[in-house]
Image (cartoon, rainbow, N blue to C red; front, top):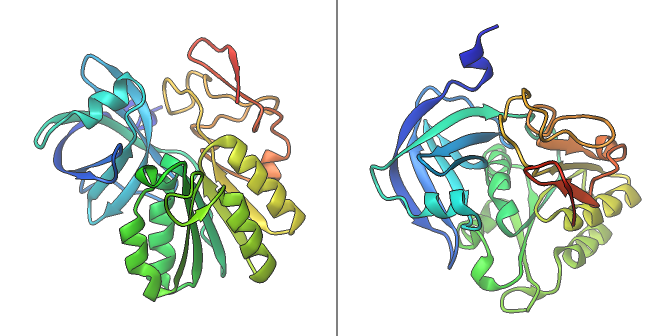
Length: 272
């Protein structure tokens, strides 16, 4: 067994650019010319003297890699405080990606969960596939990639924005917009990432309309590569790091903790 390959080839990379996405979130960019990537995969990111955490890849092109971060915990706050030329440690990419074989996608992102969907959107735009994108957040200050998505609207992208407080787009949850889309469009697959209660509601809607469903789950991880078992799901024992983070609607049907609870760093259940 090649341990270095199994653990994602630990390496240091240098930050080459930082983009302010909104009032809270930042995207850091670095170059990793030898990295291969499929939309939905993630990296384990190490910040010296702080922690190592999983982060979804939000941009990948010609060896330039982007990670979009919302500063919530100690590690994410440390990452967004970094500057140009600072170093971070990375391992990966890890995980099971999205299945992108789809003629008519509906892509739904909630909050920072929009980040791993950006490469999915870019994939379909490059193929010339007409897609519907719903991006939601609590307020306009938490919306991600809106200007970028608006620029794509002429390239076959139908964009719908929702905010809980009505400060931008439709007032309400993304489920309201999705219900309208499903009533008037022939959708093949619903792709989503965001708060788990949101994804559960979308999964039920997809099942009701008999369309394919794929969701990216988030769980506490220590190794990222299937060694520690921290991210095991009840009752199947599937690991989010290697069997996910993307799961199909059929898989989620058997995962009883989906939408109900997750486990913290000590393994204690925490209800959503």
